Picture 1: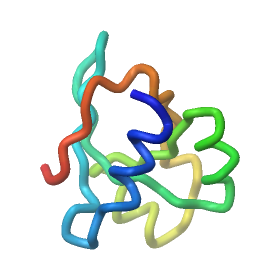
Picture 2: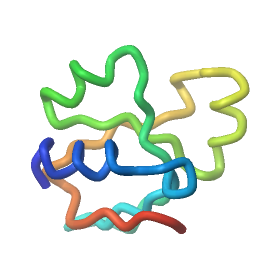
Picture 3: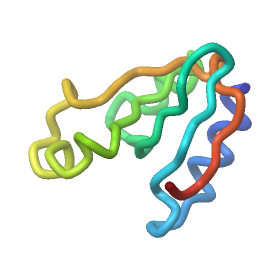
Picture 4: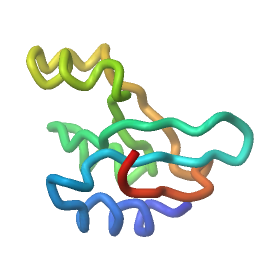
Length: 84
């Protein structure tokens, strides 16, 4: 997917739709939350996205520890589905 397609999904999310499931071309689905950190614009320009998995979500939002997130490249995304 392109950065524009992904950004449209990220910006259209309400608080209830923050959790997304990302389908990939060559790997298993990933369920988590897009993170709009201080590097969001820089990463978006390169079609990279910072995402925290559901397993690490609570700990990330309590600590802000960037090591709990993953950087994924948008060209590997097949589709994004809001909700679990």
